[in-house]
Picture 1 (cartoon, rainbow, N blue to C red):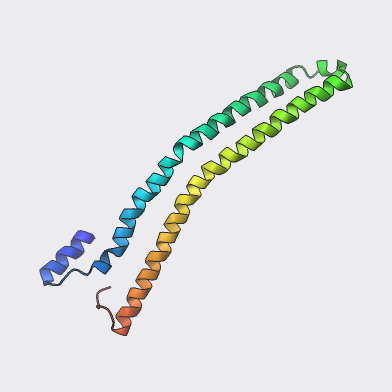
Picture 2: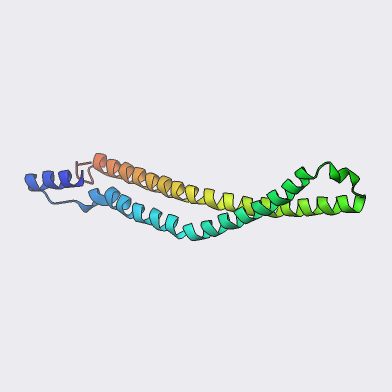
Length: 144
């Protein structure tokens, strides 16, 4: 579209209005910006997901032991049972907190790019509205 617009204006002998290229320039700047943001978040996300995986391994190990030895737990006293319950609760809370952080960080990457795209859409919509208003008031060129 940019090349077609440029050729049309050159064929008609008209000067190029740089303000007509603003939306294309914004889009051309948006693509590298979003890629930089996504790529800069890769390593921290990898570290968080690795921590989450280790936390899950510890939690599953305790859960598997409790599930496998469930019948033998009936013979335990209150202290032993309380120790097992404390260990399971400690591993569960550690895993859930790490899981929540990793999940939120991964979802934030998606939302950051969505917010940037919506902000650019609003800027372009406002630009188009002002361009149309100026054209209708006779301030700008008649080419929209």
